[in-house]
Image (tube, rainbow, N blue to C red):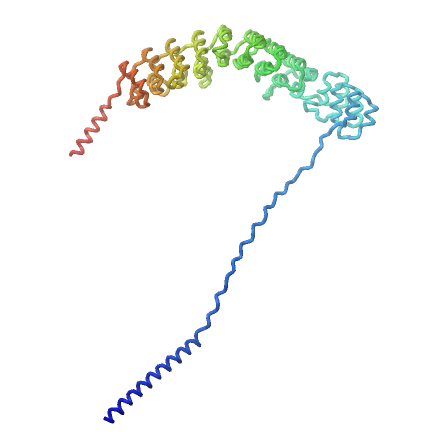
Length: 472
């Protein structure tokens, strides 16, 4: 028993020693591990710093050009110059830069002593001599001043500047040296420039035109007649003399020229000008072109005057330059003008090279209940327009009318003998009316024997063949 107790005691002591050893090892390992582990560094705190604001926009540097003061005359000096008071001019003259301006002003006044004074002070006789307001041209009505300028070395002006300035004496001198200048080959048109001058007086403009025509200027080059008539809206009495001068050279009176007079409106001015123009030589297409300017309700008398000179209703000058007055009237839907033209002999069924015809244009303009177009179509078919001749796009007139939906137009075409079952691809006029929802048109067509286009035979064969192939 003692032996057992002693052994047990030994075992307990041994276990306690083992436990104590293990505990000591654990404690030592923890201490060593803790000592070996580095102390963690604190995480630095990041502070948000907003980005700096963008720099303010830099305004572009504006370079202001230096102000250039145009040469001028002081009020006191200008008054002395125009009065011709040389003593006052001496007293008030201060600015040499105004001498060239003073020379032009003195030349226009025509005072030789004043011009001489300015030249003696140092004015440049060549300053601006190629311009419209050159001293020589300003002095055109004053021969003694012109002579003085030439004596001081002035050069003759160009014809273009002389005619624009309205300087008939300068024009005469230039043409006396070279008559060919009136008929330039460089594309310039001195005759038109003279007529269009905005600085010449009416009398000087007429004198310049007279000199140019006498020297052989072409009255057709650049349309001087049209330029002259363009002045008539301002003053008919002023434009008539030049117009008569031009007509005396037998130019071709264009339709545009006649049209510009028609556009002036009713009155004595228009009557005078038309009398003058229609007495001249008309261009081949003049009246046909002028008809486009008429209003059927108000211009019946003008229509008679123009057609009395003859109208080239089908005039064609080249491939793309056709005059089509009747088609133009139809496009304007001017029923009265269409009637006047048909009464005057316009062919109702003429087709132009591009395929246009009056009936086709009218149908294309048709909409349901379009009264003007309806009356125009009725007029055309009653005067012989062919209702079965196809339009440029291949549609018969009836087919096009059925698409438009205008019952009155469809009735007019059907009653004129249109073939109701003409086909366009796989449709008849009845198909076209139904496709566009024009029920009333469809009823009218059905009442005249129109039928839907039957399906193509080759299409049904293809369908049957396909069906047989599927059964196989």
